[in-house]
Image (cartoon, rainbow over all chains, first blue to last red; front, side, top):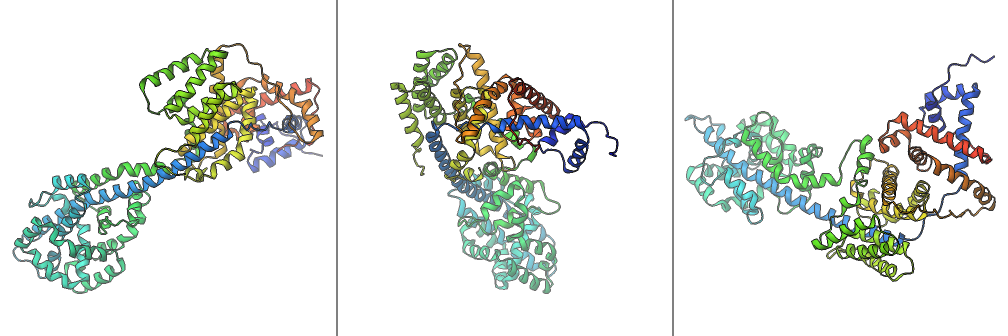
Length: 437
Length: 181
């Protein structure tokens, strides 16, 4: 004997079962119930009957009309997407380079101030000499970068001027950029021969020279910047420097963190907004300074307000492109995406009509749209034909194709239909200047 | 769709090939008017192209596509009501089945079924077509239409019940093989 049948499940549950949307565990218990319940079985059979009847009627084939122009329009859109992606990449590279340049030019000021502060005590321990000796290199780096970017980065130049006027005392912000100082330190450790040269630069007269003649330090820096990319070498050099017992050695832990800057800091930042820019900048870009990698590393621990401002300036410079790139591959919550995506296409057609053109034509189009609401037969034909012409002349691609196809469909065989067909076809296959298929 | 977003020109014809007929069938059953259905079909695909950059891979393409089609149908119906012209006479829908037996059965069933679907209230027809033709789950239909999921399900139940009553009243036997999914 069967066990007593429990209360009937909700009809919605049965509906879910019929459409395979009930969770597996629930579906099992529902089926068990349905097996022993005539009422629920009947409900399910009723659903199945309708579904079966519906499926037995074959669907209408889609019309061929409009297909050709649609495919041509799709091809055109794909070409546009390709060129847009290419353009965005270039823009991203340029913007990232600008952002790095801004930070790059701001940072060296810190070194000078740190240097000044550090050398205030009269009796300095001998081991600090090494750390100090490398400090004056920073302005040279900054000047080199300025030389490189001056001609095409006026924005960066302005920022640099505001932040660090030539010959002016270094801004306190850079003091907080201790993390960034480690790079030159490591570079120095890697090349003891440079220490002497840098020690010379430590002299006030030399430093003034560097400040006045920014290009002077460029060749050496280019060389050093190239080396800075080799993280493995840096860590090895750092080990040597530590063994010597200098200040560089004291900077070991953080320096080793920075030692990974050539690759790891990039990887870490890929997840955030700046990461996008960094990623692009990481691609071979002859103009981007290699050491900018260190500059872009988020400042550790306590940072001065000015340091944050410098970072902010870089972000602002990079933001538009970062946004554009983000928009390209935007990542949104799965649950709402369909609805959000659909919300845009669901907008009225008018909202998408952004093509430029003579105001009178636009006005006439609006007038035609109004008249079309009530127009009949011949009047409708004339209006649609005019609309088709106008939209084509205004380069409103999709609208023109749609309107012209309406003319051809609604008034086949008429001269207007022929003209509209020509316009739609002609419009669909034309590519804007500069674009390739 | 992702390929199309990236500018692959071959991707769009593939999308059209896969989905255009189904979307047309959906729109035609919604509008019950071939000419209007053709316009809406074209409009839907143009919107797909224009809005392609907004589509996210996390969304099911079919859900997105049918949302566009559904919105175009709703807008089209609204425009039709506003136009205030003489009522349009729907063209008789042709039977295109190749299998003679199936064609015969379909020719008997189709007008009854089409009339039954046309007689459904718009809210019920919408849910029925989205679920039955587009295969969109109830919870997604709820998001698309902005109605709570239980409401969507009750609309579906009412639609199924009404269709069944119509078919029974017309003396149409449901074809064999109807099974619970």
